[in-house]
Structures are given as C-alpha cells and as structure tokens.
Length: 331
Image (tube, rainbow, N blue to C red; front, side):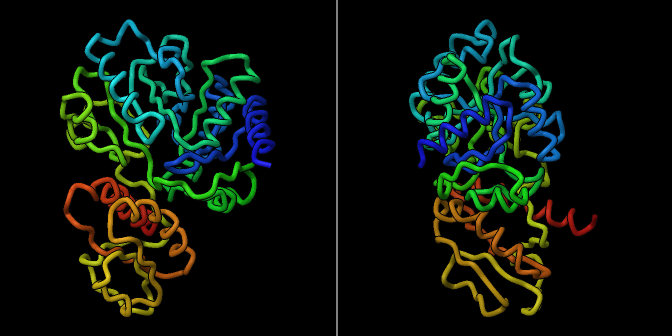
C-alpha cells in the first residue's frame, strides 16, 4: 500500500498538484519545485506572502549545483558545503546558496539565493525517486514549506494536515515526524556560515565539521537572505499563549504545557506534560499545541524552559508562537 501511495504522490506532483508530504522535521505542503504555477499554489493555499521563500527538497546524492550558481561559490565555501552535506544530509539541515540563473524566482521568494535540504524521511526520499523516474531527470526538487496556514502551528502528523485544510489536500501518511520542529537553516553566501533559523543541528555541530563557528541567528538575520520561519510572529495557536512566569491566570480559563515533574498542573483545567529534555520536547511540541488549542481555553500557559543551549531551538519556536498568538487576540 505504501508503494502505491508513494507512486500516487509522485504522479500528483508531476501533474502540478499540491500535496501533504511527510518529512522528519514537519509535514510539508509540497509541489514540484520546477513548476512555477504549482509553487504559486503553495503560496495561495497557505496564504503565504509571495516574498517569503520556500525550501527545495532534493534527493540523497543529487547534484546541488543543478540548483546553485557554482560561479558564485568560493573554493572555501565549496569545502564547507561538502563537509556539511557529508555530516548532516539526509537530515534536518537547510543550506542557503546563490541560486542558478535558470531557477524560477517563485521558489526563492524573488531572491537571488536558494534554500536546499535533503530530507531523511524514507517516504520523502521515495517520492523524490519516483518523481525523477516520471520526469526522466536526476535533478528533481520538491518545494515544501510546513503544511499549515501561514503563521500557524506546524503539522507533525498526517491528521494535522487534513484538519488544517479540512480534507482539501491529499496527504501521504508517513506517521509522526521524528524531529518535530523545522530544520536548521545555514547561510553560506557570506564567506562564513551564519545560522538564520535554529533547529536540531546546532552551531556547535556546524563548527565541529567546518572548523568555523557560525554567526548566531540574532546577528545573521539582520542582513542575511529572507528564510522560512523567522518572522517575529510565527508557529502560533489561536489560543493566547503565555509563559508561566508572565502572569497569573485562574484555573478555569487556562490549560498548560509543561515538562518538569515539579510543575504544579493542578492550577489548570487540563495539561500536557512533554519529556524533560529538549529533543523529546521538540518532537511533541506542535502536536501538544494543537491538542491544547482545541480545548477552548482562554490561555495556554507554557512552563518556562531551561536556559541551557540545547533548548534554544524550542525556545525560538515558542517565543515566536507567544507573539503570534497575542497578535491573533488583538485582531
């Protein structure tokens, strides 16, 4: 049945359709990256600004220079590309590089750079393989931002995508996403690597294979390319999200998301307790936010996270979700 579904997914993409596609990070709203009309449908379905670029997913072992302008990549950057691909692909790392001239700007949000990732989810790789057969090409790509309306909570299960779009999007079911948050994005267009979005691959991970500590996302976003998931308000539930330390709320109007056994959940009418370590918390985060969001509470209260760097990517998502959910309350 899985083989049939994979072939059907590839056929739909080849026909210019937009589908839900599982990856190890989150489910993507996927289209053939070389089909500008199909890519534009992603923006329309998500209600995503056309200037907000997409990530193109490519097959394991594919030549990235089918998408990248090699004349604008220095020898030193070329070495870093090879090092990062060898260490982290397939996996939750996206590389931003100068786009090849023939790549349509729809997928890059009008920018002269392209974001590329090689997903590790076996079904995503299988669909890329089938699409390459249908198109008789070893340079296929799938554009796939998270499969949710723009600014909302990302999906980590096929059911999330179906619920988000009320069954209007066909979804390839690949079970639960292993990582649970979006990929790390590293910009390689400025001589030294720069992290534009935090994820499972950390700055220390990048430094360990390149010998260069990347610029932090706080510094690099100021003058770097626009990339997915970096707006101040993002990943937001419709229920107002607040930190436990920010304000006291009464039990009858609040639910909570926590991780430590010491956190007093009796103060809330419902709760979800995620693992007390960053990897497990990340894997369950978006599902928990979606589960709590449908309980019709006034607030979702989040236990304040530990300060160590292993929690940085989760903290980044929740900070943006807090801003986004409070903007929803004002609108």
